[in-house]
Length: 274
Image 1 (tube, rainbow, N blue to C red):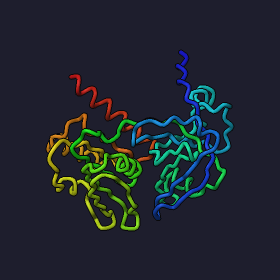
Image 2: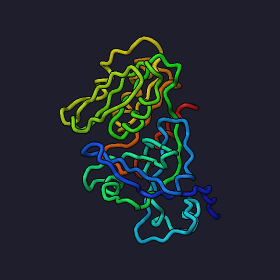
Image 3: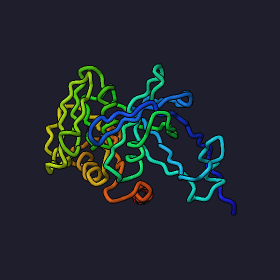
């Protein structure tokens, strides 16, 4: 039986304008060009795109469309995808910025970003998204590691003036701390992996302000799993006021983690209907 064709997913083709080293391990890639007109921004502060990495040596059918590629080419020729948050989109300036964590030759996207030059191409799909700070929340909780910093930074910039915010960010050391802008009343705590700081313990010890919280907790799947239980069960945060997800898992490639995550989600959904 013939397999159903994947829905059309046109690839947006951008041109690299410049790269900026935000911290020793964080690279901001700013892109633009004529292809940016096809990008449709949304209202989410965790707006994410799929960065498309073509397999070297493979020629893809034009116009670039992921559905066509998967229908016409063997799976080993399909581009690899990595998910990243849009740090900012400025239509007037013709710029879209994405931050990449870079740890030497480790991984796919980090080394790629480190070697980009102006006029190189960047391919992406999207954006998607699901979270923005609720204007009616009494206060906001933002928790994550380096992978969540772009979304947390965008959320800080979007909270209403004077809004109470507690942000806890786990990074390697003090050199990885970033300047964060906000109109809110924000208390920011940086935790350092090199010093043995524990993000889960820090949230457990946090003195929660009075009122209803809107929380955003993202990053490595291990601490996310612990904090999900803590916030829902021990702190009584309602599910509709909690955006929480593991962006990555220690020791897993992105492809393997996506498969594990899908299996875990299916198991949870199966258990919920029993």
